Length: 156
Image 1 (cartoon, rainbow, N blue to C red):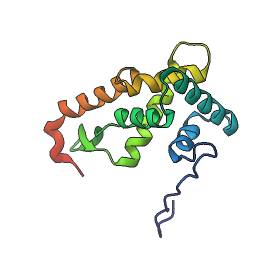
Image 2 (image 1 turned 120 degrees about the horizontal axis):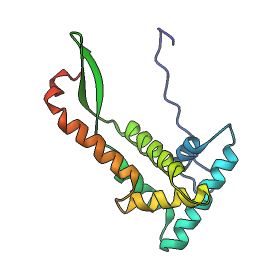
Image 3 (image 1 turned 180 degrees about the horizontal axis):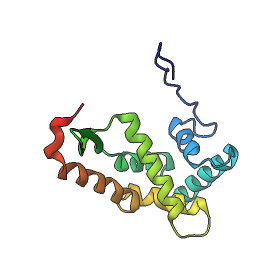
Image 4 (image 1 turned 135 degrees about the vertical axis):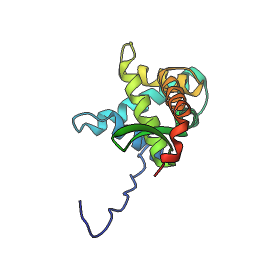
C-alpha cells in the first residue's frame, strides 16, 4: 500500500447485453476460477428465468431485490481499553450494494436445486418479494446494530 496517494476507485464496465454496471458487479461475485463468460451466462439465464416467471423486466426486479437486501447499518468491532465493542456504523451506498450482491450470491449457492441459474433466479425473486435468506441476513444485521446501539458513541 502506497503511503503517498490513495488508490483511485475503478468503476467496472457495464455488461454487454443489458448495459448495466450492476450485472457486471454481480458477475464478478459469481465468478469462479476466472471464468467470466460462464458467470455472465449464469446471470443471463437467471434473468431469462425471472422474465418467464414474472412477465416483468428482469433488470427492474434485480434492482429492487438489491435495494431491499442492502443494509443501512452494520456493526464493526472496535477495541477500546482492552475490551472489544460491537459499534453500529452506517453503511455507505457502495459497500451496501457490495454486501447485498455478496449475500445474494452466497445464499443462492447454498440453496438446493438443479442448477446455478435456477437457484440465482429464485434467490433474486425471493429478495424482491422480501423473503429468502438474504433478507433474513439483512434483518439480522439490523438487529445486531439495534442491540448494540448503546456503544454508538464509540463511532470513529
